[in-house]
Image 1 (cartoon, rainbow, N blue to C red):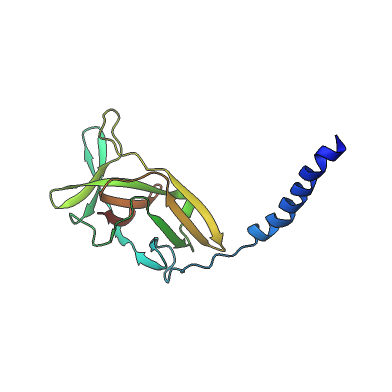
Image 2 (cartoon, helix red, strand yellow):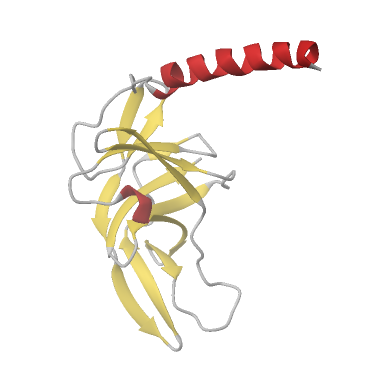
Amino acid sequence: MDRIMRPFTAFAAVVALCLPAVAAEKYSGPRPPKADVPYLLHADNLVETEVGTASNDQRKDSTVAIVHGANSPVKTPLSEPIFIIRTDQLQADRLELYRLESKNGNREVVIGRKKGKNTGRPVFLAVTRVDDRLYKVEVDEPLENGEYALTPQGSDQTFCFAIY
């Protein structure tokens, strides 16, 4: 039995020695020039998202968040975009991603409907700390072409982009 366990013990020792090296690896990618603004990661380039503020409109039993303009000037071909954000005040783990619909020259999402299929639901995001106050935010499912907004929970601040 001891002869059988020796290879496994040696393997476990090698793995244990390698783990600190992997954990100590520093982020070497591009860094955002502005704090508290998510940037789309395109290879080694960062593209600043469209920064704005949503207005809220009360309609029947729902609240509609409205972003000015029919389309975002910031576009990406990536269906699972990755964002890099350097934080000062923003909390990366409190960001939510919503799909927006273009209507009447604006982009909007229904966020407070009690019943109904058209209620906007946030897309799942994976947030990873890659350095001091530097985070990678990854969309965890393929997105369809269209307009999208990252927003901090409970805030009207928006960071918009489009997938084409």
